[in-house]
Image (cartoon, rainbow, N blue to C red; front, side):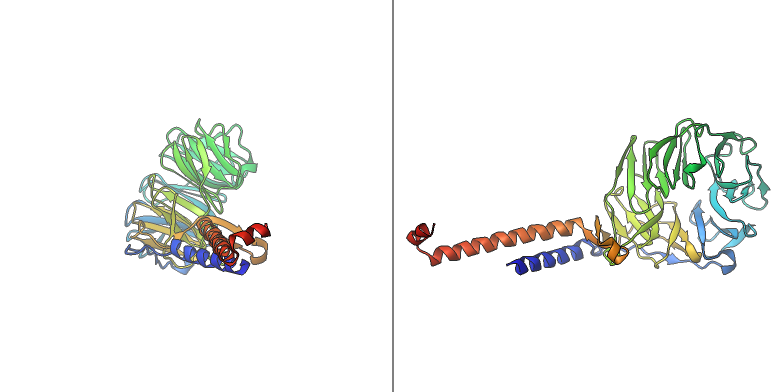
Length: 378
């Protein structure tokens, strides 16, 4: 009996997993196309950020250079050579007003990259900078956090920011507030960078806010959703594999429904409903660090070892990624992923099997023993 119940659980669990993770029937599948980048423009660490302003014009930042394209990524040329300086952040205010920041680096162009100027900063150890418009920006270094309201001519230090909040992972700036993702938490400033409060003390990889009241927070292995100041975690999703171990690096939402997350295992996942369900999109097994979309269909991603790809089917689906939990992490390294719905169906099927076996056994017992014998047995 025990063996039969176990067999029922395994079969029902397996078929359910195959069903819920299958490709959508009759639906077009999303596909990412690899783009070729000259090897002299990157090292093993690859690219840290990619951003486009339309379907043709975009920028790509890496270790050695800032690259630009005017044909959607078919060809790239260097518009800023960094000479071995580590760069992290690309901030495009307008097609001609661009900022590049990194270690001991903050440069600015107002002619689309034809000429660049060095920008004076409070300290030499610049790490990352982000600008909301031509005047308002925030800069972080190993000493603290600073804001400017005059395009970088002068800087004011934040009152309660400490270097222990580093490293900075991402910025989100609006006309009234500023948000920062760090390795030690998610921080909000409602006075535009002067003072900061902790919204989430867990490690954060990225932010994507579509309004001041709604946004998504990317953790290394799961996603949170914030609406009207309330933060709640979305169920973790995974590939069905051994080991099953996903790592997220960047997130992009263009509205309340359509969003993408990139990283590794899988490289790209997509949600059409605000994060309630997720689908893996077909892509080479890259390790992406940055993603950018200009609309529901056209997007680009970049990452380690020169990995760059684009899609024109970004709102199409792929294999469904179920929510669940990991088991035997120490034994397999990544753990065996167990979908919630498969466990539920397997458990219910097993209970039904046990109930049917009991009914059948009771029926056989009643037929074997007459009524008076059953009374005597009692």
